[in-house]
Image (cartoon, rainbow, N blue to C red):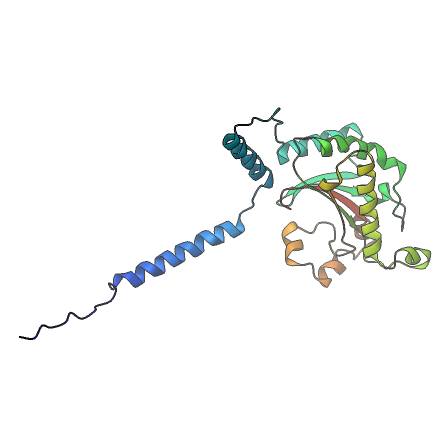
Length: 236
């Protein structure tokens, strides 16, 4: 009597639905992770704690890690002490805590040399930058209006890119000369590409020519765009 071979029935019918559901769940969690903001300070502190537990070597002194809220409060106190409320503004975004300084207070038109009037304010926030509990990298950003450089100014700074970068670099150099570690600082020039009021999300997506023209449509707006921003970066 011939023995019938059992036919391979394959996977159960419900398995296709189950696999689709697992794929959708994985996609959902990947999306959540991509939208999240990793805190480099907390990651570094966690890594240090794990190393301490594994090696058994305790840190000599555990310096409390500052939060963005604490940095913001200290900066506001510095602005109040130096009476800079009219020329410096503090904002917070997913990017970090930013100090916007009116460049008319910091620089002459077309110049990248600091005015002496800004020294007391920079001196007041330099201890915040040097605080061992402040683990945030610091970006100094230079911005300009959309008017091209002309005349003698154009000989030194052919475009607003050079002018904005030179202003940012001058602030960074001043901070380094006062003891701020250079590894914490970065100088960035944005020219006219990020008008005042542009959100962090808009900057990431890309500022259009229409946005630049609208942000420089009046002399008042152009004056607002001529600024320097110092940011304690949440990410980066």
